[in-house]
Image 1 (cartoon, rainbow, N blue to C red):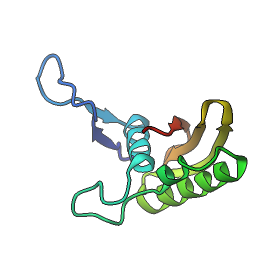
Image 2: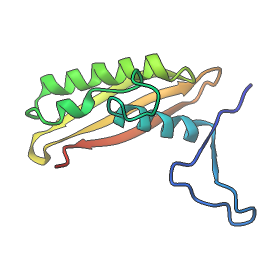
Image 3: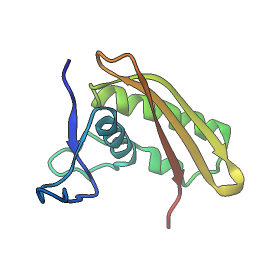
Image 4: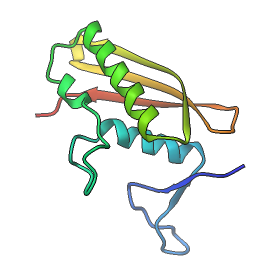
Length: 126
């Protein structure tokens, strides 16, 4: 079974080697999923096709309908751009009083039985 790895986006150094810390297994995929759903159009150099439109929905009223639209966009962007993850469930909860959405993404790694969870709070920033 292959073990997936990515660099840590915080670019922290390993205390002994001085190299950038590497995330492995589900932690690597959690970081990639979080990065995917928060990436806007043309934010990735040389790639205008890997992005999500979730930020556009954050400037609309916080309603269950917009939560559903965000859920559909999350499913689309993960299924199209993250081949290491098999989605199990996506939950988006509208929080009108806080003008935000709580998102829970449940997935499992390809060829791995354990389900992992990504939690993201989406809120509009000025």
